[in-house]
Length: 244
Image (cartoon, rainbow, N blue to C red; front, side, top):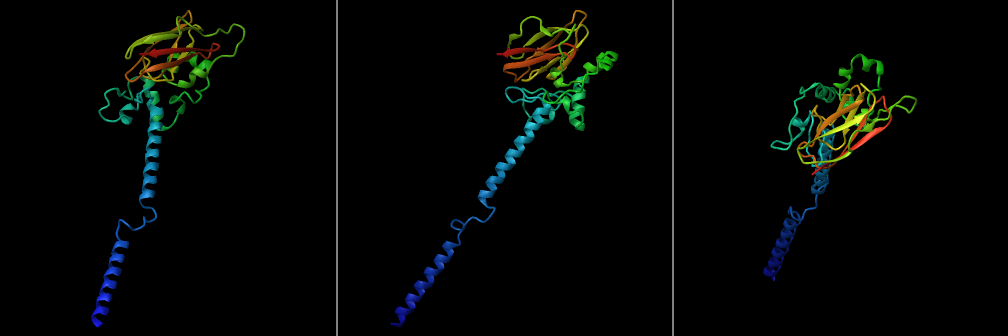
């Protein structure tokens, strides 16, 4: 009888020990607060934060249809080995310098996006130094137009406003308006003008004609919408360049 009691006690001790070991094993232990579930949420939040920063950089540098970055910040924002992206030196030309300065200092945000209003047009300052005005890139200038009135011309497209161009190809866009007036062109879908940016301001000639070359730079695809406007004329001209 005594042996039976001892045997039973041993069985109970072994069972309790096994239960304790099994119950405390990592596979069966409850997840602590801030464990795997919290870590997963953190990873998602971190990923979302990274994507938001990338979108911010893309707005400053310019982003094309296929998600490639271009502009004066491309060399900082693009991943290594991205063969389609051509970095633009921040001192490539005066217009690029104006954008690079705005990105570096945080001043003049109107140089970085067409979503912000350009500086108010000062005709006297423009006529005093037209070249200086054109050397500053402000995409939002395409929203600056004159009010209708006597002797105020309307800006008109010269030639066709819908053109096809192959990838890497070039097309000339032209308008007619105020002689010697500043005409701004802004692409809303990537590509490049001669200043290597997506926005440019040029001077009309004595007949009021202004033209600019647009290049479907690497990564630009589909329909590219381009606006043209002049603060001395009424209305905008809308171009659509179809890149195939």
